[in-house]
Length: 528
Image (cartoon, rainbow, N blue to C red):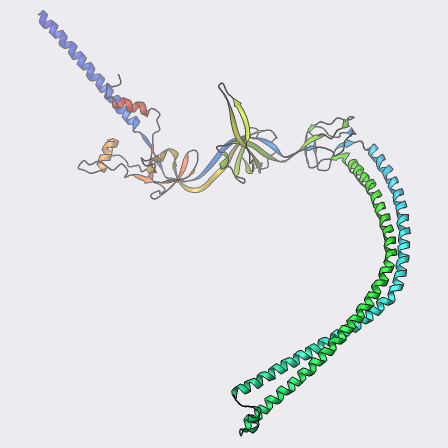
């Protein structure tokens, strides 16, 4: 009985242990199925047309359209009055500061008196030299007047002789042309009757030949005689022309000799006049230059607003001597800009003219329109000190024009920027996570194929494949694509088979997949 009792207890223990093992095994199998479902889970999306915007986010500061440190181009004068205060709004041309110009005005008066006396003395000297010069000119003009008239008459004779020679040349050239023409006709006639002499033509029994010969011969002799006559006439005309030229040249030389003899005294008088004028110009130049400089400084003593804006800083103090430094700062708040620093990794994407969406803390959810107006060609470098080492940050300054008018916008506000790098309307898109990469690095999206009710993913795959148990092609539902514009959540897809309305698979991006894969590879008890 004791042996049976022990055996019974042992069997009961075995049964309890076996039951526990079966229970734990079923629970582990159930957990494995849950993990499998989590691992293989995915979402379904649809290829849809959307408007996508690709943007770059940045933070900047609101600044005025323009800022200028106001100065005056004068020094050593007292700051007499500053009629504006910090925060005042002024218009272009308003008085910002008045400097004392009393000493400068006294200097101008003294210089103008001295200049007047110097010009009077100089004018008297110029007038005296001018009178003597005119007297010498009158004497010279009387002496050379007759020579000039003679030269003019001889020149007229020369021009007539030139015209006669030109006419004789034309008549000679015409006679030469006539002679050449008649000689050509005669030679052509003789070429047609080779071997015949004047005697032969005279004795020929062909009356037409004799008549033609006599015609061509008489025309030739007449043209030759005329050419020789015109040649002699041309030679006579040329001699007359040359003689007229010589006579004219002699008259001109006489005129020039008389002119030279009288010019020496005139040149002396003219030099005296030039010296008087030069001295007058030199004396007046220095005084006039000083007067202009003082008057410019007097004008600078009334400092005007270069444009409309707000006074943001005043450094000058009434009653002190002005040393040429900044008097005050004025900023043009009729429009605003945003200045921002863009990281060196992103700056290549930013171009002048790109649209910018602007938000500020002061304007809440209001979106303002902007445009990139300037991209710095060189970087702004700044050092950042950490716990271990110091690193250098490389950024580039970008300026953005604020296009949307906004009364709530103020200088120095923090601006949140979205620089629009690219945007497209009505393009085919899928969620960003739907794009997958195959073993060859090609991009694709996967069509969603509904599973038969009550069956898992693997069974559904087998049902779509060969009914004899062959493995289904895993690439059958892939649509290979090319990426287009990207936003934060969606991406443009381009390719054959990309059609609006097609359902696609969006794989799960669960961060625990690696742990699940390890647990399932160990079996029901492998994790313990």
